[in-house]
Image 1 (tube, one colour):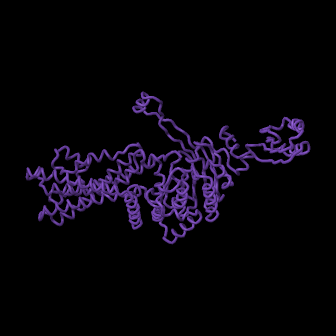
Image 2 (cartoon, one colour):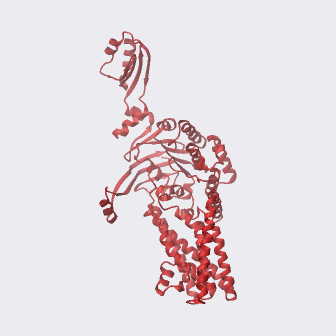
Image 3 (cartoon, each protein chain N blue to C red):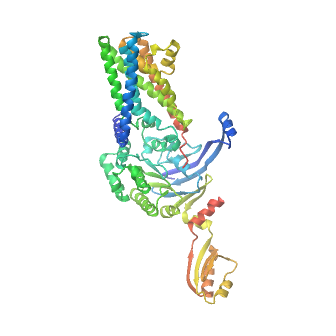
Length: 332
Length: 264
């Protein structure tokens, strides 16, 4: 087997957190004799990511996505297991490793607040030892892709959230990392800025062949960018594969949207709706039905032959509904 | 080495740009510096109006100790404190998880944490401190030899290392208790270094030389100027500075491994 760009083997992380009971007396007690509990954040996760892939990390809040990402970026030491990223062990934090990776966090900023972004970029160029011509070439490319030339000379504190996130992207990519960790990069951004950033991430991936792991709670990010998703829940890996596969496995049903001529068809509709069909919505000639995936072709044919159909569409259930089902039930 | 000097230049430039965005800070800084100079020199002048010397310390030498105290304090406020103190406290890098970005850089972490923030207004203090020092040395006159002057500069540098090591060690505590700024514990004791160690009783002198060695930072260098320094003291000072630096760097490394970032 060839060396994968990211190779994670049985990775685990347990946090030791102080335990506090409510009330003043309990607070005083914990001052004298503090008690701790072990919280397993990530449990025995294994996966491989090849160079150039974009993989989406999904899971509810507190599932262990960010903890996993932070271990892979070398920010946290695992309590068990191993990982190799770009041929290095991340938490050894070798300079040769750190020059190959980058991380963008939607809720944290690496920009210097009171000065224009260009000055922050210059400091980063020095830190990453970028020759002047390389720095300018990369900066021009990124600024062009993000269409943010006019932002370069405004103090960061005067920028909007979306403008700041563009700057964060440039700051993270100036040294052209081969592996990029994006932790909720579109958090709090408006729809157009989200789309712009998504397009940027895809273009960057295509142009540089960078490997990207993305976490996001916006399914649009995942659907548009990630051919492959890894689903984590309660610190364990539940699913690793194509997003479409997850939907098929989880939602073994289809939605049929039906518009019929409402005149004199009520009796026929009642007869057509057999036990194998769930009626989700029904109002004056418009119906939304749910049927088992395998039975859908036969049911569709029967509906078409027995009812005065004006329009019929067969759809997969919305991805948000599927994901919500997993988050609620905790299994795939 | 050139890489690190270039980095320092970049950090200075960026920090100065940031600080100069707030003009009123400059005026307040200037006022504060002049006040602390005035009270420092005035209190010595009043004291030495009454007496010729205290425990063998004359006005010029005592003024030199104040000059060293001010110079070292200014250097501390120029970069050591602004850099290290941004780690601790409620808005500090450790509690907020902002330290993540420091850890992601392919640079020595202790270097980054120690040199990344500069406070330009401390340059006023530095100029005033050096001014007091020059006045004091001029007043000491011909009793200062060139060997004494060189030894003084060496000891001043090693005093800076001692100060840095102590502050780094206290700062490393932040990994065990992230919300608390530990360096103030030292700042309180450091105020005692404003006056020559000779003015304090014997047991306190020992404590301030070897246990919390603030005496090494101010008094011992000035002893090189007055010719009162024993050779053993010179060796001991340099050895202690090296030992403290190694120990503090080790403590910082161990602390860094405890860093748990901030949740998401």
